[in-house]
Length: 234
Ligand SMILES: Cc1cc2nc3c(=O)[nH]c(=O)nc-3n(C[C@H](O)[C@H](O)[C@H](O)COP(=O)(O)OP(=O)(O)OC[C@H]3O[C@@H](n4cnc5c(N)ncnc54)[C@H](O)[C@@H]3O)c2cc1C
Image (cartoon, rainbow, N blue to C red; front, side, top):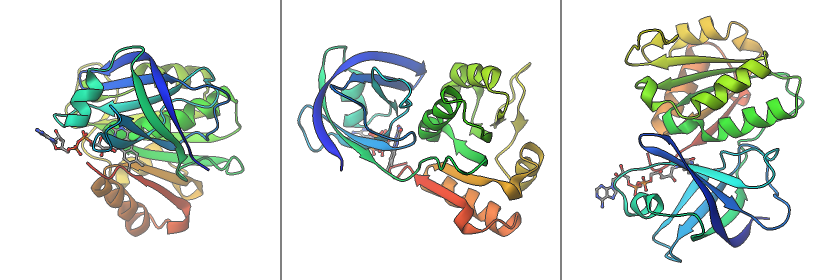
């Protein structure tokens, strides 16, 4: 059952030019699974409430973290002004975008801020040293839009069965990536064993649906091998 609690901001981390993570202190044991989401209400105002994925992993025991792409919305502007010690109200956990640890081969397709629950699941798998092969194809406009780049670089180093492939619209000299948008050719190249994988898709609904269609209609995967999280609101 989800719980509602008032919590304090413990740390604010600027992830890139328009994305910030907020770490919050939660009293007692954290009770959620990697990949789940929470609601955040600001200033006790139900109009300033959004659903956001938990970007930390249950292995990071001293805080819960959520990560927001900041826009011109009232919610974003209020969130952006939060300081350490300020209070917010959260409800958690929600959602079924979670790992089935009995599945040995998984893949993630994501774009932009859709990486947040995937960061949580990958961090959990790496910290727990789970015997799972993980492929991630992460698409962004440019290198400056990549979220959690340092985290993923570190995870790939410590966990060779995690492979990360970047897909960008704009090339950057010296940065290894494919230019374009995620398509069936890129999936085949980066995840050659795609037919054996359980796929997780996360991002804006239009992107998630486009990815699902490629997997099912072009690559012959069954819908029951695909788990989706739609970031409604984008
Ligand atoms: C399960 C789930 C998990 C999610 N996880 C995440 C996550 O981890 N991170 C994340 O960032 N989002 C996540 N989302 C999406 C999130 O809930 C919001 O819908 C999304 O972040 C957009 O919120 P917003 O406040 O930026 O914009 P909204 O208020 O929804 O506005 C949409 C657009 O309108 C513009 N706009 C709104 N008001 C104004 C104004 N007054 N003036 C000018 N422009 C305006 C904004 O700039 C924005 O581009 C998730 C959604 C779901 C359902």
